[in-house]
Length: 330
Image (cartoon, rainbow, N blue to C red; front, side):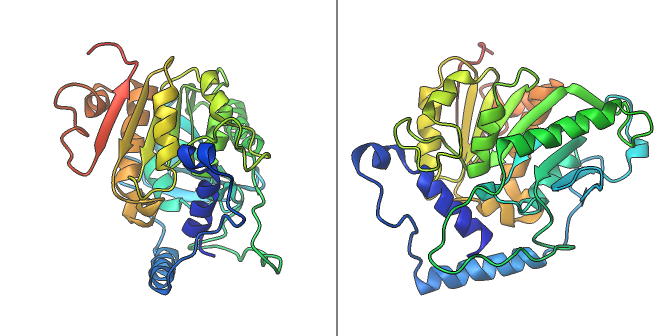
């Protein structure tokens, strides 16, 4: 199975709230693809796998690497750290789609974020795209979901970056502002971000094509989050969804309706579940994520105007629908 399809299946397990409340889970959660759908999906994935790594469009050309000091993680960062000033970098802890161990699965999107002055850390290894090694074959028999990474793995990457910032001799020494810390994740990985959202060091959460289980329908008990977890949020949060054809859309919209104690935004386009990840530099979703980080972590006024005000940037972009609430009056 290709990466996006596996992630879509996982989010199906996260299910629409209405389905989860009104019907028992199906005997098999794996949706059937038509031959045409499968052929297109396979072709899209093959093209994505062949795309070269990109450096992003921000001020810092970015790279991805497996740092020997941080086993089982992939780091996205500005390529030339000598050009980075004191306290200039922020941190993003990333949860992979499918909670998989492929830390390169969202490589174009994460490099785009890194190019704006962030160190992004994803758990796992480089198992897709340039420089990848092959994943071990799946066991024979019907496909099963195993959460290959956890919120603790995402947190371990964050802790490493903070430790490197404080370690004399590190390439990161003094270049990171610990106050500029976000957690984010795709689909199942969004659940990992939500799990870490209550950490007092976290300043914002990004949910990319993701939404929480209903409290009584946790199909993945190893993912320790549910609708009840929404009440633990302490910071502004954004949901970036792919429209009604995104399997995560119903649950993400339901999350939005339930959150009443912190500022929350939901934006949606027609990319479906993870379609933007296959586009150069992570597509329109990566742009939204960057603008959100610039606003929430750096207080950038231009980025704030992208989301707020009568003629906000994203509000006038016809590819997006936008809702926000719990923000102070502008």
